[in-house]
Amino acid sequence: MNDFDGLLAPVSVAGRGLANRIAMAPMTRGRADDASGVPSTLAPEYYRQRAGAGLLITEGAYVNPLAKGGPGIPGIHTEDQRAGWRAVTEAVHAEGGTIFAQLWHVGRMSHPLVLPNGQLPVAPSAVGIDNAQIFTKEGLVDHVTPRALTTTEVTETVRDFARAAEVAVAAGFDGVEIHGANGYLVQQFLADNTNRRGDAYGGSLNGRLRFAVEVTEAVTAAVGAERVGLRVSPGNDENQIAEDDPAETYGALVKAIAPLGLAYLHVLKRGEFEAVTEMRRRWSGTLIANHNGPAPSAPEFGARLVDDGVADLVAFGRLFITNPDLPARLRTGTPLAAAATANVYGGGAEGYVDYPAADDRLLAAGS
View (cartoon, rainbow, N blue to C red):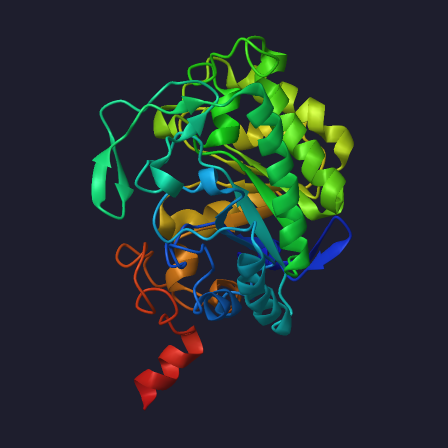
């Protein structure tokens, strides 16, 4: 018996059969054309190599021009971007894979050097990142204080998420994942320290929840609940987020979106709050866990989450960079290559599409 039998077992998600319970987590790789936001011409090969995962979730793709977070980030709101992503989905589907696009708005985690015409980043409130820097085309620079979105702009941004979902489906994606984690715009609305609004999108808990709920409802209405996942990271202090009571906040969020019948909830565990177990208690649908633990022990820990019924799927990140055939390696007991530390962000083929599958390594070693 393989220790990973449970993790490698097929599963049905929103009526869609997946080959195994392994997901490739969304990972920024920074290789898109910076001016157009069109995915790299290498992206189809990158995702094709990893199509053995039950579910591929793409790197975050920005939903409008002000949503972009750094150099080389792809977008998903123009015709050219749609065409670029179409090559990716066709490559994955040719291998029998399933792929969701992650819809991303970074909010205050951007900079005038990144955004069109040197515009300020936007956020729920004019609350900046202190004593930290952000990467731009000119290197690391200090954060700037963002501009608070007007109420009208908030509702327009909700519509932008829905339109981006429509572009993704038109590009051939099997579905979309709303990025509501890691201190980006959706979580900035949820968090006490970054949302100081006095309108309907702030103040009370229901006010802070409103943007996340409206985005999820709008995307669901646009492409269907069976094509929509939501990623959250309760209690995550990344990017200077502070949530006073994550159990209350995310318990209320789950209650609000549960009737929609989403394809899945993707929960990232980072920090002290036991996000995965807490959300499993509250969420009856498909749950994807991303524990963000040390890479060498990640598959074993993920297998336990599935075997214990805590998660239905487990998402792995950097291990998928250096092990494009990760599910096959776990099935055959092939040793895993160490997680990537170099060439993760930006560049070309090196560190992107040049990690061979295990069989290729063995053939090369024997030649």
